[in-house]
Image 1 (tube, helix red, strand yellow):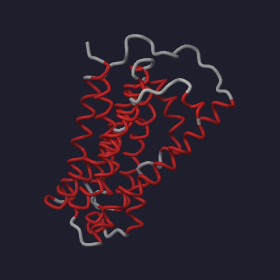
Image 2 (image 1 turned 60 degrees about the vertical axis):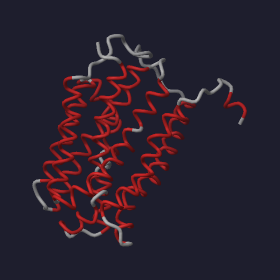
Image 3 (image 1 turned 90 degrees about the vertical axis):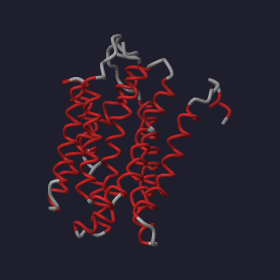
Length: 271
């Protein structure tokens, strides 16, 4: 029987593949500019388009997961990510680059919405803080790996090799999700009848969402445009990616450690 930590590792790899694909443009932005004749503004459009489908699909994604099942929906999302990457790899057409980012981003949204719930299904009431911290860090870990590997691959072997590298990681995530992941045998905590959300809970969720949004905006500015800035200042693509990845590795290593700190039940009352 597979342990919940094995399941967490599968979810980690699948979401890291999503982050790896997201960063596949920013990590090799100078090479993308050369191959497509794209400006810095164009690079920003390609980066943003990957997450743009989330504006329309975040809420419907939960409904899709309830109707077709979490695993089936995540597998469909991974297949869309693979299709989008293959479309971008197979052509230098600007319109196909945009289409590939949107298709891949749509699949990524389905992963983002459902896999957090899948972590809760396995860890509700047991080490949930540590498990969630590890899972959340799949995003900076995937981006950091992309910043280290993709500039070297792109510089040495070209942009087609970058697309192949991204596709391989997506296929790994797809295989793990298809053949290793399984739903928990026991219904997750809180899995009974749905009830309404109070006004206080809604305000708390909105506040947390805004904090998370602003945090990610600032964080994304570093790893999306940092490599281009360092290259413009005379650094190599590989060196620029490795330097920017330090920020991501520090986040990846520190968050689970901080999340595991014991907090007294009345700690919040002291502030």
